[in-house]
Picture 1 (tube, one colour):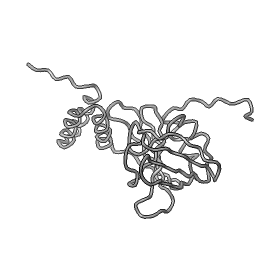
Picture 2 (cartoon, helix red, strand yellow; picture 1 turned 180 degrees about the vertical axis):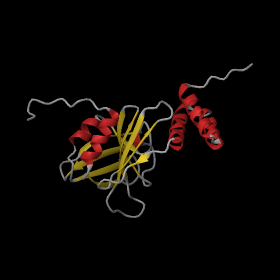
Picture 3 (tube, one colour; picture 1 turned 90 degrees about the vertical axis):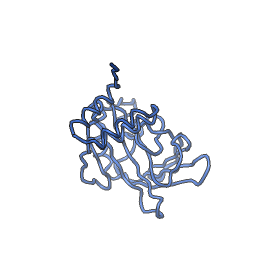
Picture 4 (cartoon, one colour; picture 1 turned 30 degrees about the horizontal axis):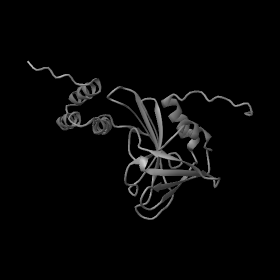
Length: 208
């Protein structure tokens, strides 16, 4: 007799798929399990969203917040997304704050952003201030270009109103720019902070 042992995450997903009685999802699960690790994780991520549709909150000042639970490990998943201001057709970008497995990511995505996330240099300006440059990363989950470094610290430093200008420079090709409203960020940030259980901010000596 041949015994097949599935990884725990895949087994959990299989149980959920079977409970839902969806042959289509079961077929997708089998296809995921046959992939290489990186592709398998991305495939399972897509499958988890299909198996557990997120609860989407009404837009808050342009932000759309969705919350669900991963059917793979039952951890909370939350995403807050806002689109850039008016731009040429096909060049609109989306700024997303994502929480999954206790990890927070800030990423920019859009149809005009080809290639891997780590193939970009990223810079941002808050309310017309001086630009801050950092490397782009391939996101751990989802698509787009992720901000490198202390994402939680960056999100905490942003004001609850104004504008965030983001500039993306690929190794080859045209520079992409987008402007995002920060109005409503305070409420959105509080939701992501609660779901992702951010550590308490440490007060600095000059803080009042």
